[in-house]
Each structure stands twice: as structure tokens, then as C-alpha cells.
Amino acid sequence: MFSAHVQASSLRYGRDDPWNSVFVDSDLNVFKSCARLRNTSLISPIAQATCRNRWRWSVLRSCRTALVLIAMAFALTACGRIWNRPPPEGESVVLTRAELTTTWTDANGGSLTLKPDGTFTANNVCGDWMGASDWNWTEPRSGSGTWKDDTGKPGTAVRRSFDAKGPKGDEVGDVLSALRHGKTLMLWTRVGDEDNDDPHCILTRDL
Image 1: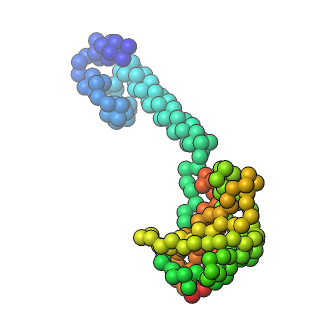
Image 2: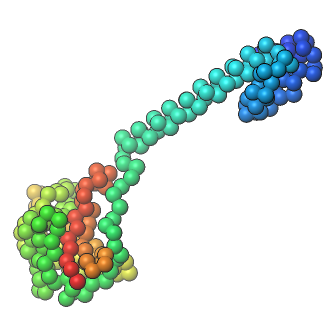
């Protein structure tokens, strides 16, 4: 149909019609040519109508693309968060056992006391209590248990296990990673599903 419009324009206005030189170009060139020629008497009415139609189709394509992108964003949000909470500010650090054996506190007043003999006591302390039966409990917990430290290339990690078992008789515990930020030492872990963006469990002590 577009070719027929151009042929009709050529027959009526002659082959010198400026539209004939641009009808095979890209949409952008057509739009530029239309804007340049719209106030002149050289462009035919058929070409003017064709130009308007090309503008309309371009706008429709842009709107359709925007709607598709919005739908994809909603789909990604439904399946999981696009952004997850970053780790606490600080650098991984290697801590000696003597540096670990002290009382650590969280933002809500919970405490964890690591003892030199490898035991600990917890008082309403935060954590990510994942059991072997794939249950997860993110509420603060109190009790006693044992802990072990492991130092590797990234830094020190502390694994703690409560004496009391989980609802299915399995072990209750988590792993804390050591960080240092200024004069503050931290033991921290993510809490719950990363997609839920739950606040981290962060235990601190001063140097």
C-alpha cells in the first residue's frame, strides 16, 4: 500500500516530488523529511497522509514496547525481588579465638556469649535457624549450645548449634561471618529468604 501511495504521488506531482527520494529510508529519515517538507507545496497530500500514518505506527510500537517491559518487570517481581539487601558495611576479618570469646549484642538487645570452652549462652538473640528438615525460624532465640570457629581466605566464620533440637528433632543453628567496620567487630548472617528482604542479624562488639 505504501508503494502504491508513492506511485500515485509520482504520477500526480512528477518524479521530482521530494517524497520519492525518502520513502525507502528508515522511519527516522521519513520523519525528518516530513517535518522539513510539511510547510512546502512540494509534498503531495498522499505523502502527507502516509507520513502521518508512519508517525502513528511508530508511537504505537513505542507504547507496545513500554507495556511489554512493564509486564516483564512485574513478572520478575512476582517471581522474586530484583534487588536484595546488601551485606553490612565492613570488610571480612580474621579473628582469633580469644577475640571471639566475649559477649556480642544485636540491635534489639539480644546477646550471645561465646565461651573459651566452646559453649555459648544466648539471650533472645537474632539468627537464621535453618534445620536439616528444611524448616526455618527467624525469631530471636534463647538457650545454650556449642560453637566452632573456622578461618579461611575470606575471614572467620562461627558455627553455633543449640542444645535444644528443632520441631522435627533436628539440629538448630546457623553460621555467622566476621566483619570489621572501623573500631567495630561484627558477626552477621542473612535472615530468612533473601527475596523477602528481612533485616540481617548483626552482632557487634567494640575493639
